[in-house]
Length: 367
Image (cartoon, rainbow, N blue to C red; front, top):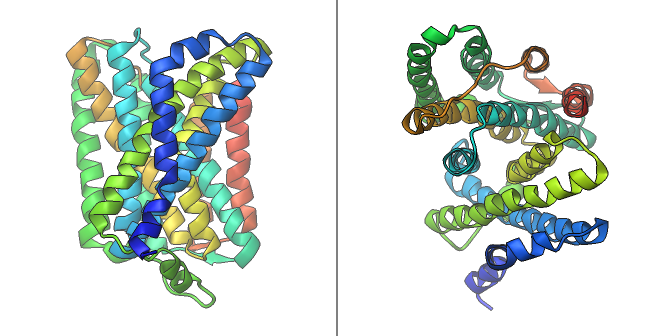
């Protein structure tokens, strides 16, 4: 059997996800209406959860092949923009089709920030430290990431809460231009001007050669880009359908509504999380950093302009200012990033601290 045919057989998660998507679109209302208790909820939840998880593995496979073919940071940048782009598309779709919810975009962005900065990145640090103890990142990239996150979070999610209503429209216009300018400048720096900042420094014991060989592919870049996006589309749609099942389960077990959003966000970000964990395991924590902190920048830099423009077109209000507890959590997260990445080294303690902040965020979901 030729290498190309063998590679095509590995696309079975794509067939599984699209088959499940067709079933959900055709019979979803009947299946969801038939949920009458814990057993039917468990079956539907387990089915959708596993399909989404297998799809995530397929996305990660294509992302790793792209990282091998294009080199850093292009490989991880494609994965980041694909996931965040579909996340933005999902938010905009909900804005256009559902009842008005001014806080939805803000809550989604904050949730993504907590997940990628503390949950995924903290977990990746621990995962890598268990095998390699101390890992290194290019501290020049951390300065760029942290500086961008501070400015975008500050002007995009904190300051709007202090703007008077009569000044809101000009401030939102300023915010759209600023977010686009900052993120555009970041992309130029990451891919052109200072590309070397976002590439790991070779260190003894790195497993990158083995990793690259494992993800060599007989297909070209275009093949992996197309198939990665094709795999992401049903993943996001099925994750949205999973939220319907979760809403039913939350009602049965008396759990808070915000838990459904958290679970869906984690599943949507699963491809990035798996890619970050895999990179950390292979002693390439820089790639994990590019994935996680790059997602943090993209989710604010892309989402805020998109939702503000759509909100203005359809006449829907968008609330961006975070609540006091959320401001404290995001401030602690940025401070911890600054301290933990200041010297360009990580260890298991630093990962545990990030993970504890993520657990704290989860606790406040229930409060």
